[in-house]
Image 1 (cartoon, rainbow, N blue to C red):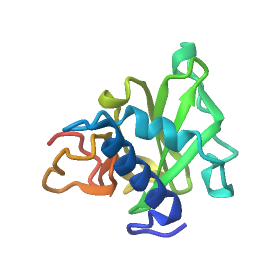
Image 2: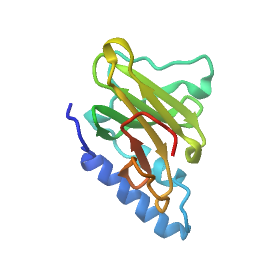
Image 3: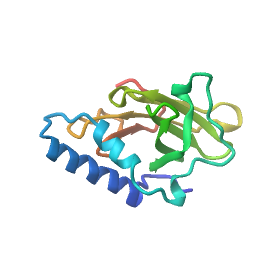
Image 4: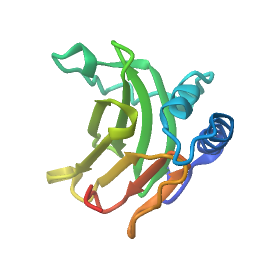
Length: 160
């Protein structure tokens, strides 16, 4: 796994889907939901799989991630940023730090998805935060646009 901004082909694909979907919808600010759903509908690749030793599960079915649905958006500063769906088809934003794995995720309405992780103990230094945004939303200072629909903050803070 590499550090730094490595969106790769998949991140570029999400960016293109976001731009095309925005253009076709005619939206001014762009609800990212159609773009993220289109990205989730793409054929998975080997890099889209969540680490095998992670079993993200919660009691609430809407928060149980369908691990077969995950798609890697990109990597920034040692944190992998994924989108996925839950068992009830809600969209999820999943962050995974390098080994030892540190996991953070949330599921719900796409335009409200935001999650952060901050490492402690042996995972100290592993941190990141992400928000799903519309194509035309501005990127706040200190944040990085990983693709058209996802901004990340390597310092782990969700504050703008």
